[in-house]
Image (cartoon, rainbow, N blue to C red; front, top):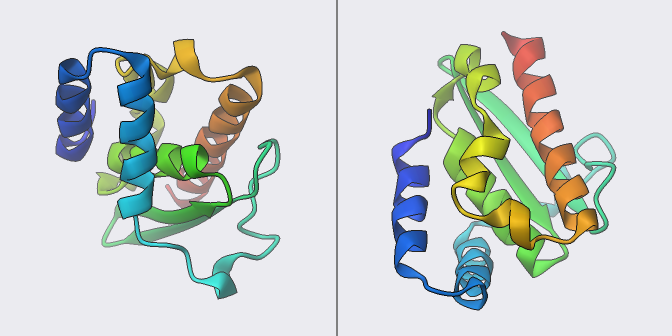
Length: 136
């Protein structure tokens, strides 16, 4: 179960032959994402367990989950943008049904991220799931 936006990323990845091109794609995707207002970069929005500084600011409007985010590392900012494509616009009651590791696996991310980046990605997914479960 993936959003149309995430499916577009999957389709784009199918045309990219090597991991370096995919890595650049993720970084560029993050660069295109709007930044998080500095006023929202507070301890309550900071995600622990990431090697980089990461902030996620979730919102639930009209029963749909979405979030904004930011990081001081370009690849992590790109990963946040990919997670936004996966989760933003999903009904809050459906967020827990999203199999993020499997969906991200379709992009081959699991095979090419360092252990620290993988742990940080898991921490971001856990934060998203926690917020959604509390709101459901």
